[in-house]
Image 1 (cartoon, rainbow over the protein chains, first blue to last red):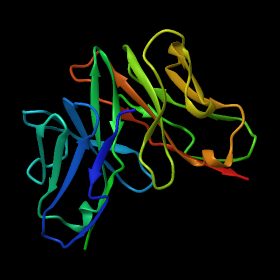
Image 2: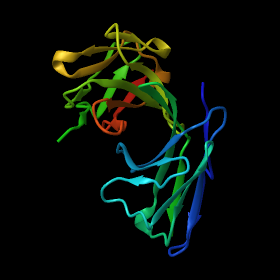
Image 3: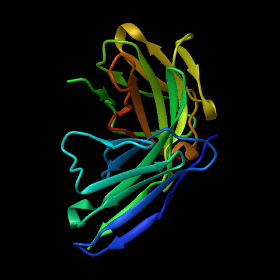
Image 4: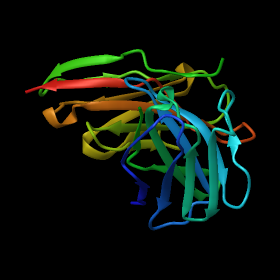
Length: 117
Length: 115
């Protein structure tokens, strides 16, 4: 099946710094990528949707200036957490969509555990 | 509000017991339905999906799910669980009649299978 990778898998940063997380579709072209956040023992919450070559669409309550998303190519999307704070510590998961007509599947990356100290 | 509900937050079973995890959604139109599994320390994996046709869907590892449109449900079942089925299970729904087709997840059910 389709594979989505994320890098890094874990990152620890100091409060006030920025962190970039990469999401790659390894064996397919993803016109759309999704970024989720998962809090402990909770479900995945969609943060934003990015389409290749255009601006990301953010969900209500997600600060677009804080969570910068770039989808520069059909196989790469990046999420940059700017001026990170301890409350940004979470598990960030990306997902890539393989479009097939009306119905499609999303493939998920392994996630990135961000800890802000 | 439109949502996806998983009523069982934690389930504990012994090996060989039968499993049924509930999933209900509140979208009125046509939907695609999914069950994902997240094993400890691993990423989400697709167990099975329903797009159209036979409402009884068979997935990997002996799992199946039944779409009952009148009940807005898509319950996951397995006749005999194994210790290796210990994981968190997420139901997800993609409404097709909205402008943008987003996947909406339930809150998850944590399954613990004791040997």
